[in-house]
Image (cartoon, rainbow, N blue to C red; front, side):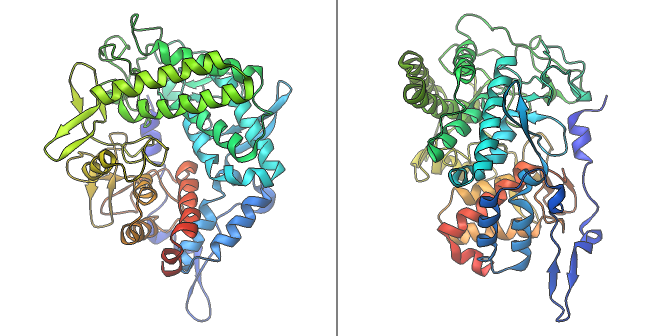
Length: 478
């Protein structure tokens, strides 16, 4: 059976040497980089605000290759992955992850996040966000335990690796892996959009009902009264594609955290209290409470969100911290019985990404200790090679660095030299394609996975825009 892992692992372009056809040379012998964006008539969506920011930022980049990469990557989600229309009488936006014709709740939210600050000045973007918020609410109402969905909410999954999963598949669901962040990301996007625009149009009764389902699901997966309704197994040679104990996962002690069956990588958890996911839920529940009070005047549900956030936070502090000789730092996964796993995975939420998601301050002492451990040999998925150093994960295996981890290192640093090194690694490991990838070999960037991974592309664009404001000298000198 073809699995997602097998499909994506080999969806790489040719080695870098064969990709230089996108680089021409002018009369002076200087490289002229040819845009890899689709022709205007073939772009899925065009935003005047995005195009304006793209031009302004590109003009501030000193290196032609980096400027070319930014031009390709920043609008990639809009250029290639969004479908905007109507569904059931409402604005609708469906966002594929890239090379898979399905929408991940996590990816779709993260893919459009860099455009949120521009929505106030762009009516077309506002319509896109309204449609995606409606679509997320619909997806949650279909199945809050699913991580990926079909364009047609009545269709069966088109993902061949999910066709025979042992779980309660529903129409409209593409894949049904329970991941905490699948419910956090839509809240982050909704809250960010509301804060940026003041627009309350998409927060209708269906959205309100979906948010109550989020709260109910989080409560169910605290597992205080049994395992709950969710189970998942898959026939696969890769053990991270399935779950233990008849699909209910390894046992946890009911300490107040949320039991997660899969990580943001779509890989199975070992100890089901995933700490980055639980900490993300704390922030999301507080954001949701703010919205429920201000927009829906629902103080009761808002109070329930705050109470759950407080409970999860206290449980994470009590059970999710490793006490080391040089101070405490966060574990990656725990079970509440005292067992703790330290590692980090490049997929966000990760330990490295905590400040990026607003979970803690960048200078928080515990975070700094955690960050140091994650970017070191203490983390079994930290890799150093001739091409770069960075974090990967079990999803693509040893030696495979995820550019996303390098971006997160830059996002969470104020050190000019550290950020400049991250930018240099990103520039030197795109294998001549002008795009970011899922992962690349630590010694040979021409060996990479996923030639079309929109989240990584727009995240790179978001980083460059941030640096244009916070560290413009890096871009001028890059």
